[in-house]
Image 1 (cartoon, rainbow, N blue to C red):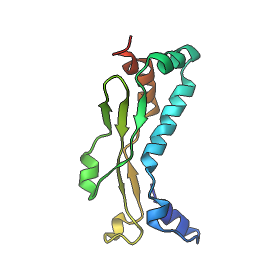
Image 2: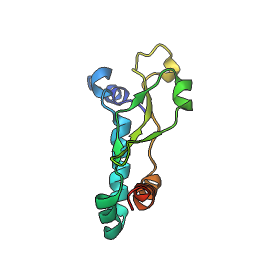
Image 3: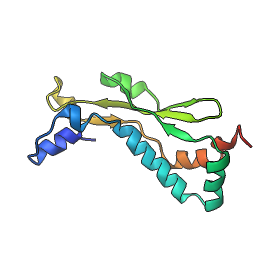
Image 4: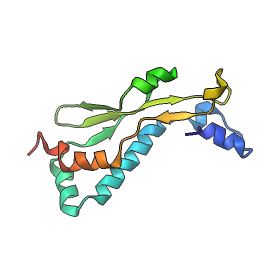
Amino acid sequence: LNSREKAMRAIGLPAKFNVTDAPSLCAQINQKALDWARSAAPTATESRYATKGTPLVMDNDALYSPGPLWIWAPLSFKADGRAAVHVAAPAMKTAVDYWLKLSAGFHFCKLLSPARALEHIYIDSLRKNV
């Protein structure tokens, strides 16, 4: 993806990389995938997940630089006992004035598939609690 900074500058708006691209955008996108999966699941399934399932929790993005480190880093799933499974997305983001122009103004994320989120809701979240 192009960074927010790059997109804003392209349309003539002022943008500061440390402000526009500072949040954990990958975590926000992954949360949207989980939200969609919860809304797509049948009511009984979502209710069972809400009451008996181990929830997915989106942690802050895990920032990587340079690129090869990001490429090799997988989306991370770490169980916190029965309390939650924490999801951390590898991210690499660069400002428009990045030293390597070929990589300037980008925001890379490893994303949670909505299908994987549904699989967690239906199966994986219940392994320890049912």
